[in-house]
Length: 279
Image: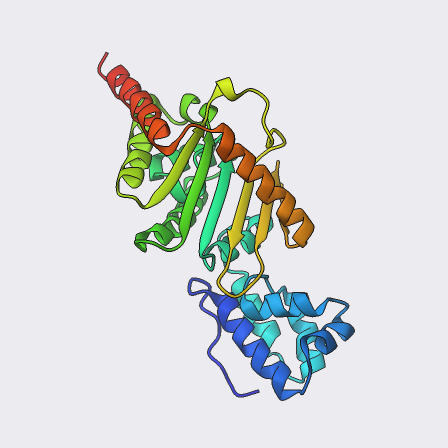
């Protein structure tokens, strides 16, 4: 394989690796299914690697180098990708997020990472890691703000969120931080950059009581679902599972307040927090 520039971990490395994998596979005269056989993965998984919607691990990169005769190209560049400043269980989802054309997310407890302001994110990370150094917290906050830069694009990705009312009511950081954070959400809604609905307490039992949910769709690859629990997560591509989670999200939007009603509630709660600052 010709020499290629090592991956810059902040410039969609999976897209580059996927393109290089497609070239190397075709040069070897292999179909996606045939390449998958010695690696004990499906042809569709190879396709997802090539599309950049699945992460290539160092171990898999090493096996690809062996099967395709690409020296240490994939091993070396997969090692570069590990420089991402995200928790291991979240890295693959963060990379997929950067490639998605649409992201739909249900958040039961916290403002989603893409929508967090710096002070809010800092309070969240400090709560997660009460004994961490300030420099470690600074790195986590910086990585979160880098993710939020996705919204600098005026239309892509489409971001549609459903927030549980608890997200608005739980004070993270301080009431000042909450006022700033909710005003930020309202500004994004009013600028038509995001679609946001609030699932009110009055909705009672709902389809996503089990926890957070994120759905990602792509231009040239199958959709993914991302589910999390304490300190762990799963990025899912099984069509039946993704379909089930898509229905769950659809049910949430049906139970939630309309976007107009949601904006009114968010701005009302934000003003309550702002008023409390001066009392």
